[in-house]
Amino acid sequence: SQQGEEDPQALSIQEGENATMNCSYKTSINNLQWYRQNSGRGLVHLILIRSNEREKHSGRLRVTLDTSKKSSSLLITASRAADTASYFCATGSNNDMRFGAGTRLTVKP
Amino acid sequence: DTAVSQTPKYLVTQMGNDKSIKCEQNLGHDTMYWYKQDSKKFLKIMFSYNNKELIINETVPNRFSPKSPDKAHLNLHINSLELGDSAVYFCASSQRGGGSGNTIYFGEGSWLTVV
Image (cartoon, rainbow over the protein chains, first blue to last red):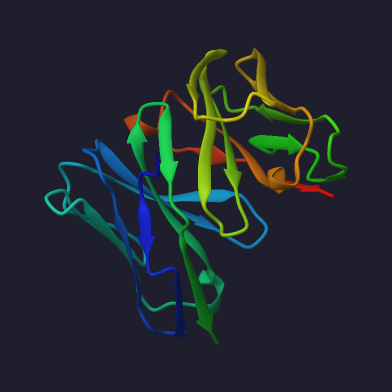
């Protein structure tokens, strides 16, 4: 069964704007991870947030986690054209990590 | 050095054929995965192995048979290919399970087209 579901499916913004993507999941988690996929490439890990954390930062990335709502958000600040990619959240247990269909972000120069 | 490498990158084959995709990781990880990404970009887990032992088999048709000769390799063999098997197949690995907070490292994908 699918675990993470990203929203929106697609997002188009201008360079310099902020981009917010959301992830909802269904069961209890130990951690939630965000990944990025450039067109035609494999996924690359961006950031992990544990269930006892509410917010985490890494460079221009800010991730929040609300376990009561079973949701997470990924904020990319001051976006760049190079941020154009698909972004996935992943949750699961041990060897069973599940992804959704991702949010396709387009950053226009 | 490529951490997770899979071959071939592109594969075009006819319906009914049998094909294999090979995957190797040089990260010393215990856990390896196969994921399928469809045309809508949905990434679905197919199998996961831990130390050569099958852990997850996610209602995948019997035509798909993973083989793990050692913990650095996880190959995917597909029998009697069907049009619906056309997708991108990703091999991945992690140290123990990703659900334990470990990063999953992905290969570059194998584009399978069945005609």
